[in-house]
Image 1 (cartoon, rainbow, N blue to C red):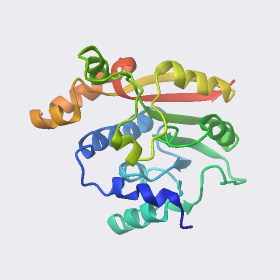
Image 2 (cartoon, rainbow, N blue to C red):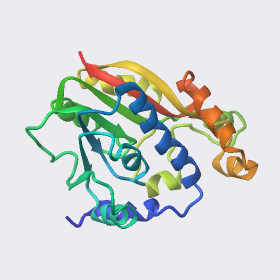
Image 3 (tube, one colour):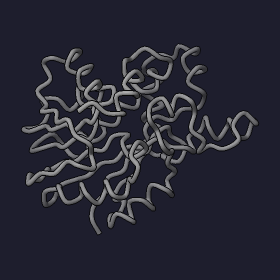
Length: 240
């Protein structure tokens, strides 16, 4: 399935400045999901991306299915992770269909990429097993460093996409309000909302500080209770 998604594959090779943030965000949120959902039954994961989350989830569920629309991203992941036992399905999210029902469905930093996030939420709600859980992770436009950037006159609009966002194929940022609105339009509600990584400064500034891993861990721990200031939003949702 050769497609335009491959044009964004270079951003997932792991060789740019923003991989500092990506590794923090993309290893943190699956750990929090495991904390809330446990590790049993079946998992449907939307998107491979950098592969961090898939590696965290790998081997933790009886069945693990990953959907990915870019052949180049799939090849990159398989080359780096030949022992991963997840079943990877090459498909667009909008086209995937199955009779299987999953105990956990994860959309980790997916909704900012798709044309119609509400359509995706509605479609995948139907693939959830009774009593199952859906988790969403999205980038937060109102993260502390972007708020500070706007107040300092360095950023005119916290929701404005950067060149790196466009390289990744991002179409939008979220706020707590806009995420709740999309979830409601999909016929769901937010049962739990927490922050992923309280980020006080720009990525370049954070890298230059050479912070110890314990400090990064503390910023992630503090962010849980302050989603409005954190780099990412993690929501557990259910049908209403």
